Each structure stands twice: as C-alpha cells, then as structure tokens.
Amino acid sequence: MEISYKSMGDRVIAFLRGELDEFTAEHVRLSLDTILSDMEAIGSATLVLDFSGVTFMDSTGIGMLLARYNKFNKSGIRIEIKNAVGHVDKILAMSGIYTLMQKSN
Image (cartoon, rainbow, N blue to C red):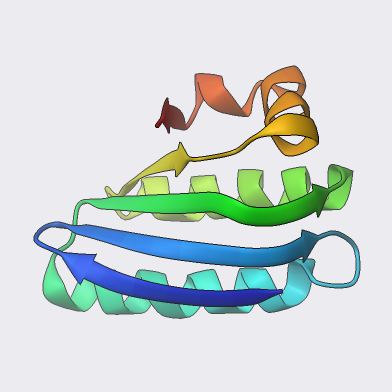
C-alpha cells in the first residue's frame, strides 16, 4: 500500500494505492496519523481519502478506517471517501462507513 497526499486549501487529499488488508492496515494507520498531525498544524478541516487506487479491502481495513474516523473526528476534522469502485465500494457500503464518512465522486 502506498499513500501520498497534497493540501488544497482547507482540504487534504490522500491517495491510496494497493491493498488495504491485515498486512497493510498498520502502515495506513501510521500514515494517516502523520497526515492528522500535519492537518492539525495547518488548520485543515477535511481529509479526502481517494480510493481510486485501492484494489482490495477486507474487514481489517474497515476497522482501521473506523478507528481513524474517531481520531480525526475528535480533532474536528471530517473524512470523505472518493472514487471507491467495485468490490471496495461494496465493502464500504455494506459496513455502513458511508453513514460516517461522506461519499464523494
């Protein structure tokens, strides 16, 4: 799993590429925690997770997303999910993630 990100005004867009599963969730968690620190420092309000490069996701990824949602939410930062397709979009929808994190395309 690779993660890169860029700031755009009060938003940060994180681009995820690869598989989000048991083997990569810790790396994603640590990367998102770094992004959170940067966002708090510059006063960003929204993190957009671009899932266009995510090819697979399992329940470990859902758990990691829920934990990051709680952490970002406590800092007053909202999370949106963008460009999730196919299997990944279905997993996100079935898990109820879209009730917490807005789906944007």
